[in-house]
Every structure is written in C-alpha cells, then in structure tokens.
Length: 161
Image (cartoon, rainbow, N blue to C red):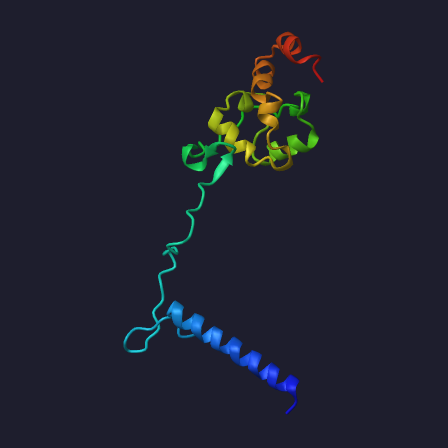
C-alpha cells in the first residue's frame, strides 16, 4: 500500500469517528432519531420548538402595525352606481387603479370611508404601490372627490387631473 492510500484511509476513519461521536452526544441513533427502551423511535410533535430557537417575530401588515391589531375585514360594501375614474386622484395611475378595482374598490366614497385599519389592510395588497395610500393622501383626496368638492380638492392638491 502506498503512503497516500494509508493517509486517505486514516482521514476517513477519523471523520467516521467524529461523526459517531457527534451522533452519540446528541442522543441520535441515526436517521430515525432517539429511541425508547424498547428500541422504538421517538418523534417530537411538530408543534414543539427547539429550546434554542428564537421566537418568531409577529407578522405585520405595515411597518409598526402587527396583524393582531388589525380588525378583520368588514363585509365588502357593494358600491352603488357606476365606477369613478380613480386615476383623477394624484399618485393613482391606471395600474394602481387596476389593483384597487381587482379588490373591489371602484368609487371615491369607498376610499373616503377607510379607517387606519382599512388603509393598512389595503396597503398590504397594493404590491408595487405599497405606501402610496398614505404618501399621496388618497383618503383625503377621495373625501373631496366623493363630496363633489372640486374647488376644495384643487385648493389642497392642485388642478384636478
């Protein structure tokens, strides 16, 4: 046997010994895990977390607003009348309008009635347009437009588009 063959065998034996030592220290007998006194594999329940695991952060729908603080969505209100041209609002183009229409928002009055929880819930569904509701003050704009107050809208937001 050559020297290189002996070295390779020795390295393989050392690695095998390390693997066996690690398995013995963790209490595992192999792929099936630890066993009871009868040799039957014991399995931890799927809900049991490792004692070393960090707790998972609470999911949020918007920065600083945890899901647990958002009230469930109210029953959708079917708008009365034809859809409004939502693109007249500043910061709301045809693609954002399509997203809103897709979730049933078609009139200024619907947007004007949104609460903070509604804004957070809808904003979470806006994809690439996330954050626009508050940044462009859609609720405030919609209140003017739903009331038909074009002069008030233009005084605050500029010429109507």
